[in-house]
Amino acid sequence: MSENRKVPNTRALLPIAVFLILYLGNGIYFEYINPKEGVMGFYVVSVVLAFSIALIVAFLQNRSLGFEEKIHICATGIGDDNIVIMLFIFILAGAFSGIAGAAGGADSMANLLLSIIPGRFAVPGLFLISCLISMSMGTSVGTITVLAPIAVEVADNGSISTALCVGVVVGGAMFGDNLSFISDTTIAATKTQGVQMKDKFRTNVRLAVPAAAITLVILMVHAFTEGGADVGNLDYNIWQALPYFIVLVLSVLGINVFLVLLIGCLLFVITGAATGMITYSTALSSMGNGIAGMFETMIVTVLVASIAALIKENGGFEAVLSLIRKKAGSKRGGMFGIAFLTAFMDVATANNTVAIVIAAPIAKEISEEYGVEPRKVASLLDTCSCIAQGIIPYGAQLLVASNLAGIASFNLIPCLIYPFILILFVILSIVREKTK
Image (cartoon, rainbow, N blue to C red; front, top):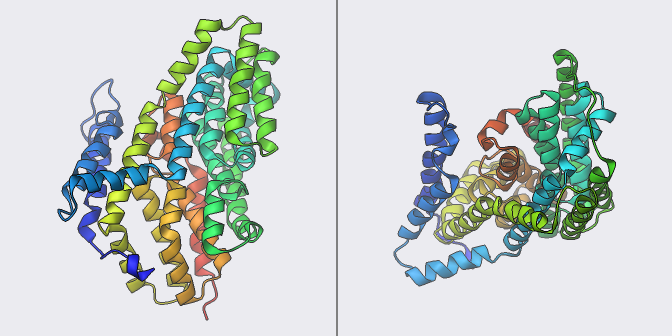
């Protein structure tokens, strides 16, 4: 393993700094310091443009490699199995979202939920449903795709904050992604550390469930103090909402997310045509428009995979790992190092599964050196990657959510209650860890 290790190079991290300055820096400037009327600050600089410039910076580094060699490194990063799976999910998710909206499914499902759940408890209800579905589907992006349109409709019909409704869906999606037995992050974390999924699950539950319970309490208190929302008598068509219920049941049964989304698209085509909401031509155009709406997210995924591959090749990630080795002087220090390492890798790659795969070998070394149990390492890898992935405004989860909600991803961050509470439980668990 040491033979393949790159020489630490802090300057290789420059592309990340360039992106943060361009995207977050300009976003904060135009949103809060020098706002433009009618223009959202975080839309002034496209996330695609910011990552494109960061990629150019990455290409300009390491002159020992030729242009063709760097292209090959990028292609290898883009061709990672997890990246390809994500791209395919984005395509199906876009088609599903487009046809569901055109067939009236989102409106009917939202109105039906609001008719069953008192308006006062709509937001806590969204959080619980999101937790359940994500844990069953094993994918946070798929869960957000299914529930974000419903959250938007709930917000519109109930005069509730759209950012809050969508934010709790994202939080619940990350809860399930962290605990699901079929999640890519669970598989990656357990396989790389050589532990059983059930052991990692039991360790994760002690962190995730209390954090989710506190989140639910906060949402319930918010519901009582706000006094609820009078949504009135809402119209809905049970047949238009039925495909959503079938999709949710299939998700609970643990059916593959690709099959779930395909079945969902087919059912919405059938029910939409049967109820007169869509025709052959509008069905095709709505699915096409839904896929087109995912193009930015897909491009960002490709760019991030390329940048991460170049940074890794240039020794940027190894520089971070070397710093951790110097600072970790005990079991607790090693655990904090693993947590920081995983979160940093996710910030750098914007992909929690990729972050785990990159961080796992070094995390295993740290665990062996400082005596951290493998199940706790796997738990930290999974939990910390999900925390970071659920917070960064350029990650697939927030990009998809903001795309479906029509609001800037940065505006969702204050409403991400669950991930921030989970951070506290991770810190507490490490502090309480017994040292040898």
